Image (cartoon, rainbow, N blue to C red; front, side, top):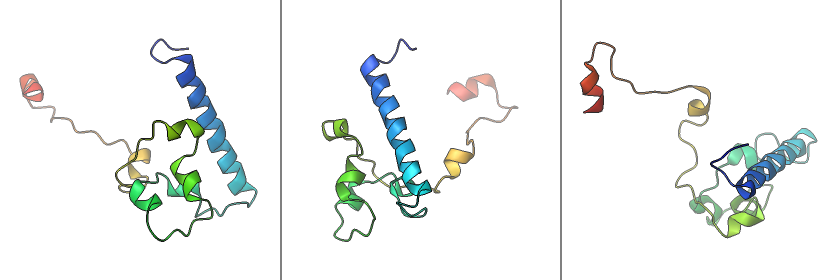
Length: 107
């Protein structure tokens, strides 16, 4: 399917999508609350996982390591969300004005 990703990486991506679907199913079936689950609270930065207080309906371990392979190569986000999901739902670009000379965009 692609020349830039290995089969192992594609398998990890597929497994992540399957796991996310299972998390959605748990919410749909009422096993987890709609407003307090791993999906609505993601991402989980280290500061959140290591905080003294933990009032989530899932474990810190599940939040920090949603897949076993993550234990070996965890990327810790530095913060939770900026503007919640605004950036996911609205394309934000920074372009020079149309009247700006072409060379100004590369300067």
